[in-house]
Length: 250
Image (cartoon, rainbow, N blue to C red; front, top):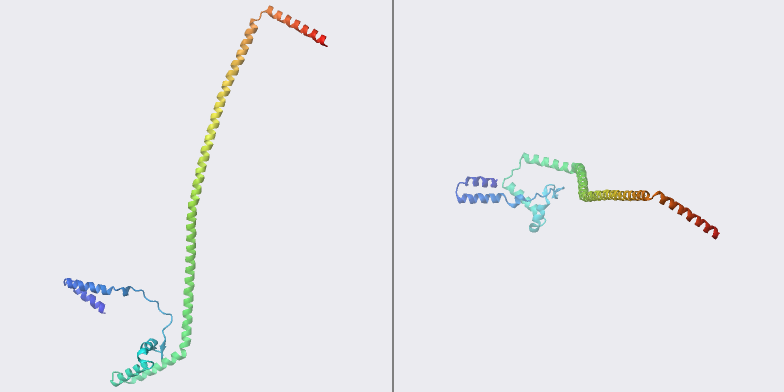
């Protein structure tokens, strides 16, 4: 409520010069203190310890160093006597009704409190177990998702290696095709060169045969019938001499 009052007064002082601006800035700094941004502590699962059903144990621990063990009881008794003596609190029929209701409430708490607490604890445990089961399922699914993500990352890294291997294979295939084409070109050039060599050899052989035939024809034409007879007679004479030589040696 004080903070609202400070904000209202600061908005009223916006047009009052440098002093009003300073007050507005001060109110803003107070309203946005670091304590307002602090995290809220978690709620405890079980309540704190009490005495006599309603008095917190912290009160006794707070008064113990100064008043001792009986301090809180004397403080409560003195406060009650002060209220009654000064008639700040007047005992009437409502007091007896409240006392009766309080006794009934205390009896009900003492009688049915443990069973109700056990039933509430059972419901709470069931809720906690269900929440824990949901949490475990969520954690399991998230863990599996993380593992799948790690696998996908590993596969992505392996995919880069696969791409490199495929790239190397493509380069090797291109190199193989290039070498095959070079080999094919070499063979074709060799075949054509061999063909040219064969053609030249054929021309040379035909020329030689033609020259031999021409020489033979010219030689045959140059021999006269008389020369032919003389050469035949000489051949016959030579054969006879060879026959006589063979008989003599035998």
